[in-house]
View 1: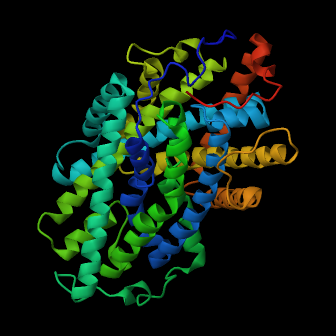
View 2 (view 1 turned 90 degrees about the vertical axis):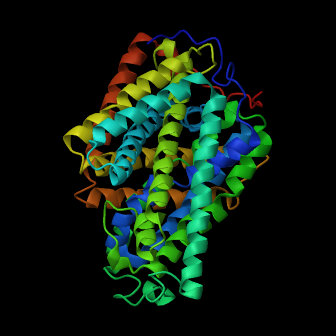
View 3 (view 1 turned 135 degrees about the horizontal axis):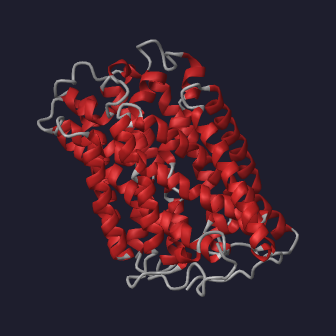
Length: 474
């Protein structure tokens, strides 16, 4: 590593190729991922209908997080986003740690999405090994991300459009079954399914709370809209709009969709490893319905993996700009993409292909728990940075943002406590506890790297004592 800074700042040099419709759809699509489409099956089996309440509770916390991020983004919109805010308000080490941890989150999330995509393809082609499918998808998305940010945005737009259209269609069909009683599920579909089979909390409140770690994984990627700040055409308008639509997205796509599904099909019919949406359409008996839904959830997995390749390359460039990663990661290709950072990130995502070869039945669970732990750290840094920013504004040291979070620092404190509670649940669960061991090892490795960096280039780790001047991007 070197102390020599990259000539451009993280947001300079990028192509402003993400239009309003693309940013909006990236934000919408970020709230609909494999955690809902695949992970909800296992969580329904654990918690029954009470899973709806867990998604609603976690959704409220995620909204607090995103409004805190939104306030920071409109104070100083930068591509480094939360890593830059951690650096500004908590110090260089926290910016370094957050940037690398967010990179890890997306790398392992990419592994999870590749695993999920391979599982979905297995639905049609059971004889094709999971690792083969995962490798093919990895290569195709990698090439697309190298071409241009416009292509990334367009792919993400249509992936998200498929997910949104399909989910709305599922909800409409489910409501139709409940209202008019058509299809094979018409005789058994009823709102009473939410409490008739051993109650709303069939396995107790404790079992329901234990699903929160999986629920939080389902919400990973909502913060991706912050990374797009440096490549959005008009961040001052597009970012607030994208963030303010989050509540209705959660209410419709998570709470609404799960409520309808659990009314149409009783919760005892769901199991881990099977998408509840695929199961519901199979029970309804719509011709090719399950296959169509399987295609939709496949696009959801590929969408998230596509986003992971996008964000990891940008985060590595931010780290390189601050002297916290090899300088080569800071260079842009002829197509104005951080090609080397994307390439290295994809190489690590390929570990997911290996996991699909070695332990195909456990690969998804392993990587999702690690991604959740890394995501919780990122969210905590957003919240703590927001709390410290609010203090600086109150003291007159910094200007107020044009997009203040409702409830101010109080809501951020509530979210901090909630995330620490979820971390405690992860530590309590023997199956997911391994991710904390992984994160402890990761933290030790980053601390060692910081010590080496500080010894070689003390000016990198000690600079930016003064507050940066807020500036518009663009």
